[in-house]
Amino acid sequence: MSTPISNHFSYEEFERSSKARELAIDNRIPSDKIRFALRILVLNLLQPLRDCLKRPLVVASGYRCPALNRAVGGSMSSQHMKGEAADLFCKDALEALFLAQVVLRHCLPFDQMILYRSHLHLSFKAHGPQRHQVLYDPSYKKAIL
Image (cartoon, rainbow, N blue to C red; front, side, top):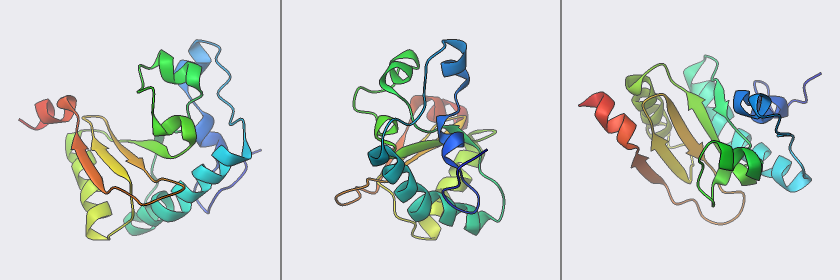
């Protein structure tokens, strides 16, 4: 049974990870603090983005426990570990650019947006001001050149 966050997102999709399954890592959300941060991320950014698009978004990576974050080579300060970030699957760099443009065009609040060749990283801080920082991963730059 899934536990809804909004009309189109559940906590379980933020825990799902093929890498965690492969390495037998328990990636269940451990605290109400992280559940709260995920709820804020979804209600302020991901659900409004989905509503603008009128189509599903696929969470490629949501919450990451510290062991999973290390296994995937994530930053030691990754917002994924706080429940403040999600990577949305994109079929290519152009789709990542399209999603980023929708976020910007609709003035959706975000802390960080990072464009990758295969996904768009979006974060929203549960506390404090959002930085509205847009970054490009080298994989994205190579894909569009």
